[in-house]
Image (cartoon, rainbow, N blue to C red; front, side, top):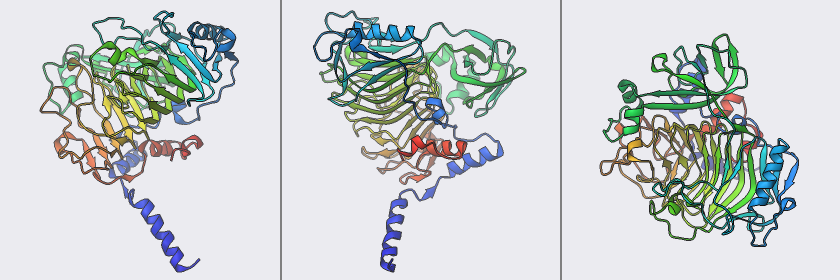
Length: 518
């Protein structure tokens, strides 16, 4: 090889790495804190996703329940809803199964159907199609479902829902303090607990000092009735790794400082497991121009898939077209939505985690239309959400829908960035609590000088100072008093992906499945 060729190769290498040449000091702080067993500034997001992202989502080989064997006839314009329900019932009776949709169009919620959703309330049920493209397996929703309460625009049920039998039950009180990002608590009575149990570490407390600490340095506003009256709420979902006497060790880190005096409790977590939706195309008839809060149809009428009370579950290789709310997680844990495409008309929201979910991974979402609220998080004290390597147009921005979401990572996101798209009712503010992390976020909308996380011209944009590292793509600047950390603004950093590097640090190497996304 000639000297000239070597020089060209060196220049090419330097060019490819120049954009990510600076190692983040915030990352170095995290690494050192982990080595020394100290509390890091950054939350540990590496546990998010199916099986803590340690394993690839499986191609299960359960018994197949082909919907065409239960009365569905693809592409005949007649309703296939009852056939789908019959296939689900047969799979549940079998205690596991694949609800299989051969290529073609399957019609749901036709004029002759009732307005009830399709519900899956058992574990190990997988919806599987033969492709999410226009020539693949299409579930066509002919009509939207009406609101449960016409006065509540958000009350339309999703057309397909997962659930679990039973309810959460009180187990025991927490009897000691625990620092965030550690794994152990002590309880009053461990007799009802065992290794492998899924539980909820719960707090509801409106102590004034606790509330102020939770939102600090924001100033509490009189209109924030939920946090004033009900108080700080935490609903972290955990699996028990071991029990030593009255000490409970979790598989995943705690993300909130536990103080015995505040009345922390442990509850059982009613859930299903191993639910999947894959290789499917979901199409609605939402053809109107979207207007925020105009009607129930705009806000929630074309909700398609709600994954509730599920652990170690997934949605992958799916396309959603002409719907207002494609996919949401609620009261779920350690599950993944990956390789999701949104097409057609603009609707209300993109893929989101809410309802007190914990450890949800939302990955490789390509929102081609730019939903009013882009990918993000909702309320119920949703925690430890990772939104990774996803894109949306410049006319929309990330979502943080109040009611105390916390510990959220937006990692290698490309899209618009501006105020006003985080939602939530006035009484449920702030929009996001502590530990909102923006890592190597690429802004494609116009630059903003001294971007505000505390709006001065409206009531609906209040975010506890976030951690912002490697923000780039536009010349946006931030006010020092409204951010916890602002590092390398204008230039991306190493590591390129915080989620990947935290996972690599924990496991020693990246799992093979994740390498295809680098």
